Image 1 (cartoon, protein in one colour):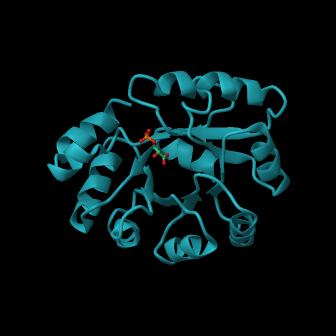
Image 2 (cartoon, protein in one colour):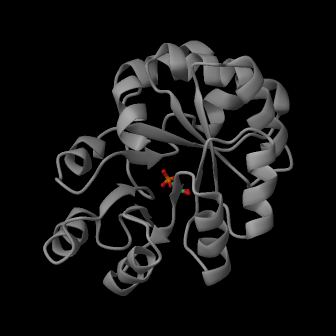
Length: 202
Ligand code: 3PG
């Protein structure tokens, strides 16, 4: 799924916090217009689930996913609203079981070799490396890649417009995530042109 999606979208996934439901659709339209179509709406605000439905219904070019999923109930709620993929900052046995039962694209969060091994044992070979920079950044990803080259990562956490290229250059990185494409100041100012420009610059 990711391979197909990455033929349609730039390999940078905005990690989005929606405070105001009215911003969801124009923000998604701005990102999509800039070629960024994989959108991770995090379950960090009361508006998040409604934002996923709105984007799913009104922005058909968007590939809408849910982030900050920490329980099976959250996963199911977001899937019911139209999420096409799901991302977690970590994993638990229950969450891995729910994601396996669903069978769709789920990125468990990992930060150590043992976590990578546990998620791989559960059948996952694509994972979120989080928090990427505090957990060792590029050198950690390179080190993990030596013994486990079949696993690839979407690093997020501490990555910026200045550093995302360096992560994408690694063999075991398939996409990069971060909040810099939808900063709170541009979101609250509803500056969709500036958000489109940030996406276009990728
Ligand atoms: C995440 O959940 O992936 C992070 O909150 C994104 O981290 P950033 O704000 O440092 O980009």
